[in-house]
Image 1: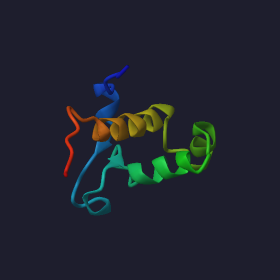
Image 2 (image 1 turned 90 degrees about the horizontal axis):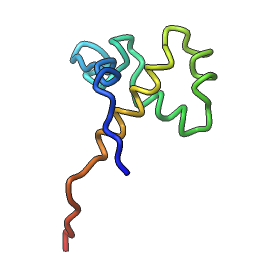
Image 3 (image 1 turned 90 degrees about the vertical axis):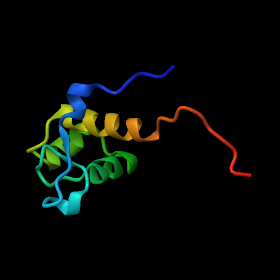
Image 4 (image 1 turned 30 degrees about the vertical axis):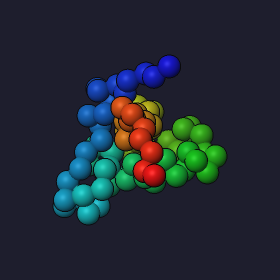
Length: 81
């Protein structure tokens, strides 16, 4: 079952060549999406991340997950061989 990303949350993810070399960040705050995803992958809970980064909101963390999910969605898989 595939659930589409929440477009309202995805609007929290921005890209600007002047901020973090154009990497996707949260609301222009210079917190790269990649960093938040790595923290989650390392085992940190959203609550722990929010305690360490008080500028962030819970919806920002969900937006990072939505962003990652939208990047890996594919219509079809084809063999390269």
